[in-house]
Image (cartoon, rainbow, N blue to C red; front, side, top):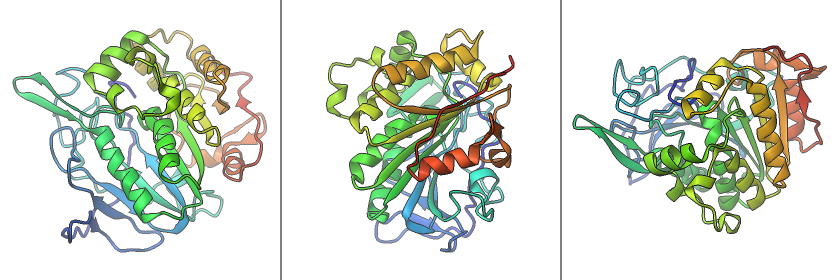
Length: 359
């Protein structure tokens, strides 16, 4: 979420770290269908405090891959961007990956022992966020004499994309999954995956950012100038003539969908997610009626010519992807896990929208 960290983020184990060899990314862990390896791409990759960036790989079916963009928050000034608390424990955002070693696999789609997990046999590339820029930045920002932040998310993400293309060149199906803040950039990454692996079937599934509005001042000042996002936008023909003010969060879905209409675009939101509401307010938007924002954003995306599949659940909850509620969620008689499975199978799905959504 914007200027507010998403609680409950998890990252795979980084035990048994090994040394880098022959210029290849550093790898650790034991290769196996249910084990995670830590990958250190090196080069220009780094976290906000200049420390080492890494991502994690679970190698299973090499023809089916999930690129998982985790949440982690965002920062916009000296207070919210400060390197406070333990590494990765700033209440606004994760600024380092040092010391991350939780139990894995987790719940939800990261529970690979569940027979009803539609992603159980997929290979995973799991990218944790540690740059405060929603995986979109490429700029060094001095917030004060004592605070220099590397908004390096897009550089880190590009390294993960390159790894995906190199190590899974024969992938037939790739799913870009974005959790909260990670779902903001998910459609852009989906379009970039399509460029690298043009023969793969692409699905983008973003969770919990559907309410973030298109605010030209925010687009220009924060996404464009503060984080350097505008300079990272792909050189797609459909992007010709767009300015930094045009590149709002709904625009990411529009441009990726117009660039490659074969990408399956889908999102999940709670109608009145309080974390999303705070994010909208920190952007300078009005979160009085969050559901109206979600519905309006979807209408805008579809009016531009992009099919946006959506599953809108009632209530004021937040988490879904990495908890067991992913399997329990049902709206209007449609289980979320079944809906996602149909998306992956390329079957036609109807939008699911709560009738009594709460407030």
